[in-house]
Length: 229
Ligand code: SAH
Image (cartoon, rainbow, N blue to C red; front, top):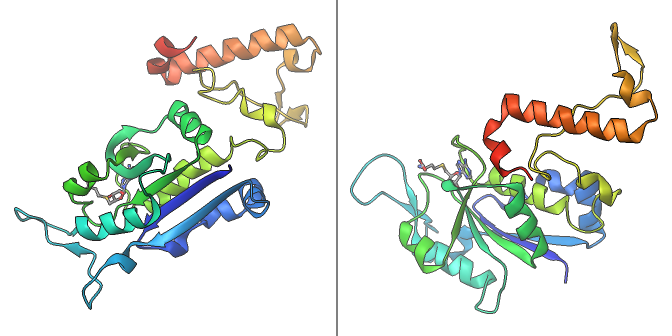
C-alpha cells in the first residue's frame, strides 16, 4: 500500500502545490504516493455554507465550527483507517525528523489545516487530532505547514529520492547538524576546498565531517547534543 495523504482545507487549490514539482511531483505521477485535498466548506449545511463563527467568551477573529469539521473528517477517515489524524497548530508538539520517519513508515496521514483563530477544542478531542507545529511563529493558515510536513515525509518514502542513501546523512538523522559541503571550483574568490576533502583518504574525510558536524552543533544547536548517539 502506498502512502496516502488526505488534506482537509478551505483552500484545496493550494495542493499539491510545490509537491507537484521535482522529485515529489515525479513520484506523485508514478503513483509512489498519492494525495487528495478535501474542501471543508462542502460539509457546511446552511445556505451560506458557513464554516466559522465568533469565539465563545468574546474576542477577536473567528473559530472553525466543530460540527462542519467533524463531518469533513468522518467523510475521509472511518474507524478502520490506520492513518494518524494531524491538526497543524502552533500549539502542537514541534515536528521532528523522528516523527516524520514514523509518519512515513505508516499508510499515510489525514491532515487538518486550521484558519482564522483556530478550531473548536471539542473536535480536537472528539476526533483525536494530534496537534503538530512546524515552529514557534504564527502562519495565517495550516496549508503551508501541511505542505512542509508532507515535503519532509514524501522525500524519505522508498524510491522517491533518486539516491536512497543520500537521505541517511542529513542534519538530524544522526542527531547532529550536517557538516559543510563543497564542490568545484577548487578555488572560489580565494577560498579553497579544505584539503582533506580532496585527499582521497576516506577515513580522514569521515573523521573531519564528524568533527565539523559536532562543532557546528555545539555552536548553533547545543540543545541537540544530549540526544546525539
Ligand atoms: N490563534 C492561534 C493561531 C491561529 S493561526 C494561536 O494563537 O495559537 C491559523 C492557523 O494556521 C492555525 O489554526 C494552524 O492551522 C495554522 N498555523 C499557524 N501557525 C502554525 C505553526 N507554527 N505550525 C503549524 N500550523 C500553524
